[in-house]
Length: 192
Image (cartoon, rainbow, N blue to C red):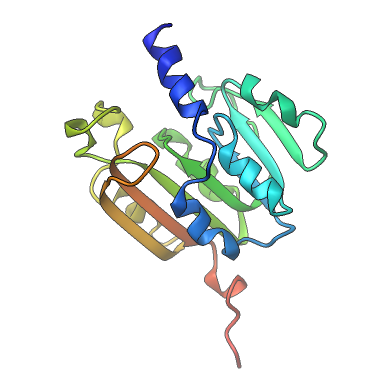
């Protein structure tokens, strides 16, 4: 088994949703639409399908999602988000976008534009400092200090943010976690 296959196998063996994703799941409408970006084996998409959401799962390799083919609430899209192809979700917006353990900075505008008003972004991935613990070690694949806050500034309202060493995760390491809303007033309307 190659190193890449071994790494993918390890990721696909994780079936429970990230505690960070679970923590904020109630902000997402139960019948709302969810985009699981870089879905892998679909652990987050499956979590939201079980909650009654309609889910679009996007990944470069979708063989691990074949069992969702006949699920009318699941749409699986095979797409390489890094090869320069057009964004596979043109003009589509979602009540939530979930990104875990994936970073490709050039698509941040598309991620943010994929949120409906009131849409929730839940993002969790590795950050600088992780190179001392495990992979990824390449700085291109590690968030800079407070980078998730920076990309959401003037676009989203931050509900939760954490940064630091996470030891109780399926894949421990130095991570940043963000939960932010595209127009908080849509989720918690102000009383007049």
